[in-house]
Length: 595
Image (cartoon, rainbow, N blue to C red):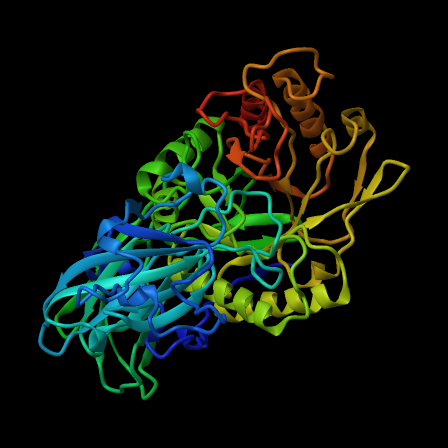
């Protein structure tokens, strides 16, 4: 059944403040008037959190957030940020200090900066991401507390700042907990730190908080535009300009500080072959926001995925947000350019950004390179399904992911989970997330990485109650790795849903340069044969609309401990951790050339 996604008004993007100073995420932060706080930060490792608790485990008012200095010779202050070592921000501590390679706990980071008041303007302190829990202090005062390691957040710190010298201290804690999202166990490195950009944003008292510009339908090429101010103010004029399309429209906000308009235009459609982006400008009271936006539609019809009304096969690969060479959290366009360049060389038109929202530089670069994107939140494996705080955390991450990337033409799928065990509690949790995603953005598809239940007669049947909530049925399978590769030719697949199918993971491990017979694990020949057998098997799946094999490159994981082979790397990559192609790369590349 054909179902075209329709525009969701920004007013549906509900948000609940987590702290008094926190304000809703500011869209398109790259186009705002900002001052970077990236660079060298001093840091103190606090294994027992003595900078936060006293010896009775009560929060102390004399914590490290004060960045205190002795005022008299007899004063006792047992830390000194100015004498502490430095690390780069954005960056993870695991790869910048060898003592912290496996460290999970608290590290305090401090940055000095200058600030000067600009009339009545507001100043927001923005973090692209901090993994995992952050307490943020400005000049010794709490600005806010944030939980979740992969989405942006910002605080209005205007009243905490002073003319001239200022400092910010962040208590970062990456300890794993059962109630977290992700939970206590996950198969990637738990990189701790301030892992994405830190910015001061200068804004007028009333500013454009968020906006959406979409191609609503192919018929008539109708665009829809909506805008949300940070305040519920009526009568504010916002002008939208798309010079190349000769569009210039002014809207007036209502009592909620929102406005919306539809308009006819004939944009050239964004496609992987021609990722056309239009220069867009918003203006209010002389302040402008510049963006580049592409226009396309994405929908399903039966077992097909349609891009701009035409069937498309998603030739993809899964990617972790890890630097191309040697590990460490990727955090900039240069990191993404290498990874996405490898994906393009493989023949991809699509990438699965696993298992959490990747940084905004990466998503925007993928858009310019013509790579479609699956973006997901880390509801991974066994979440605390009945914990209300856990659900709220997951929903907040979902909301922030959608708010940030809702204008990116290449993002076509919001994923709400990966490999979650079936239960009534899980179904309730995930169905709520699916409904939330739909309410926030009805212009994109919703999916999740399911698992296939197997039978002894070589018949694999996908059966998941979440089928009614997703637009695309996706699942992971590891025949040939966790099951005998000789089983692949015997397999039959039964997917009893009239929806497109994406095999979101398959693959197996190999150490680059290790050669031997095709039945010898860890050799490139074993992985090569696994891919050959799997691809022949996948060709028989009815409704197959795409694949994202696991994974583009070897990545660090503390679960992978086999000495001399894994050495704390998951070796399922098509590239090694040094960027060398394994034999399976060429098998998949050839298969994609035929699609």
